[in-house]
Image 1 (cartoon, helix red, strand yellow):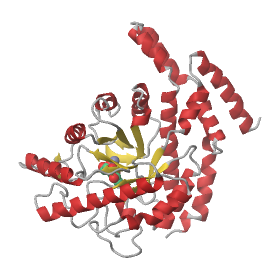
Image 2 (spheres, protein in one colour):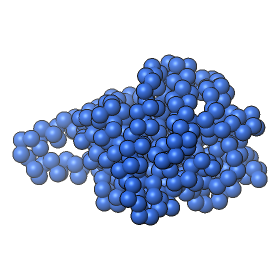
Image 3 (spheres, helix red, strand yellow):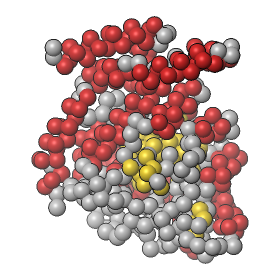
Length: 418
Ligand code: RNT
Ligand code: ZN
């Protein structure tokens, strides 16, 4: 039997199995088509960007030196299109400020303008891709341990200016694409060691944010991302989860949940139903932390399944923006993109295939064992046949068929980069 035929037959059986528990797989497939990931451009080059050849700083680290990383804008664009050609559905691209088209000149962060992203906007338009954006505080001589919370007004103003300009760029992108550009703000600000100025730093960050957000923008949305600690900034993080949660709730901003930014036994998934009662929307940075915020390639693991299930169970599918945020330089970077993106889709698919309403009713009726039995059964139902069908309908490789495609691209393109 040919693979195409196998996929079709398996799907027909899966459709019946799901119908038997009240799940309409056609409806789920239609919703999957509307599920857009925001692919983080920084997976192509280990967060290097086009500004300088300096080291990655700011408490983050990309490990591995697999050959073939993208060296310029054309290569980043080509790699993104290659990855997208192997992922079913339509997806967005998430840019960092350091990936601007600077024309070979040095454009400092307080000088950046929408024109530096003109070529990205054209490329996105031509390929039917929507863009999201990030300000960049790391890897710059003016960003030591502190940026927006720096006690020196000159340095603080530099980063305020940078972030305001990034909002202008995001706004221009949103306007051009006729859909809001989701702009994330993450600053690494923190202390390596003991500090008695925590309250001061957080006060400064708050007033910097107030200044940055003072101007209303019609075509972009602001997200703020906290974390626990960064490398070299182990003792204190100014923009902690609590800080940004309170700020977002008070100011109607969007918290970013990066799945690597919590204590090891803390559940990012559990935050969904709590935060969504107080903030308008959520942004995700789906990653895979191994012992720390290591940004390993996203997999279909329990934390990610739980996160997507909580979103679906809260009926909040359209209140969440689905960014990815991992950067593994140890394996083929296109392969990393494709595995992580498809894993995130599988998590969403499995969440959508749950007969949530029926289980919720059982739970409310006090039917404890039946609830557990259903949840347990869902793990083993033939969701994979539905994912394969999703790939087939999108004319994308089914199963492992993306491996030879990536190997060809490696042989012909990425392996030739020095
Ligand atoms: C760092 C944050 C941040 C970055 C990107 C590159 O810990 O997760 O989102 O990974 O902005
Ligand atoms: Zn992140």
